[in-house]
Image 1 (tube, helix red, strand yellow):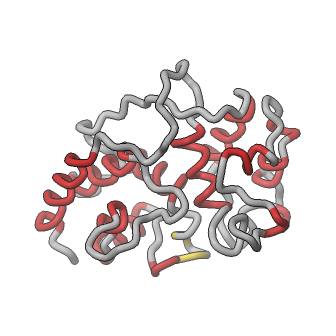
Image 2 (image 1 turned 45 degrees about the vertical axis):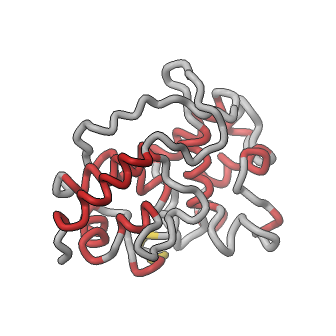
Length: 218
């Protein structure tokens, strides 16, 4: 097991020194309460679970459907009408028609609900000022949401990229202890920055680092 106390403080200093920057070129806006954030919620969710290699990305995208940008995603969406949107339909299909396809895990009910609500709200390219609190204690529930929306597409029972799973609490703890998860979050120490298609926001990176620093409470 790694000695967490030896390397986490340095990573936290690195994070705090770069916290003011953003990974998105879209200017943050003040959104009404309850607004679903496309840039920080929906886009990474779809990129991580649908636009990985061999699926809906690149020149050889499955069925010619690419899902790596707002404009591409909108070709599969009917704003204001989730049930008439191809994107929502395939996420809620049963059996072999469901996306992501079996044996990959389906999106969580919470993730599907966020996509449904985003479409219902007009499927806008929102990028909200979340007012992320980078000092409050982080819980496994918060970390689990980040992992499920942005990492589990490649790190689950049916697809353990890098021999890392993040779909359960026990797997996430093991990944932190046995693999250099923190280096992957920041792209340091020779590790490629993860996720590859949708970089974690500063807020989400801070949530994971606070959780690790707190001893990974459940």
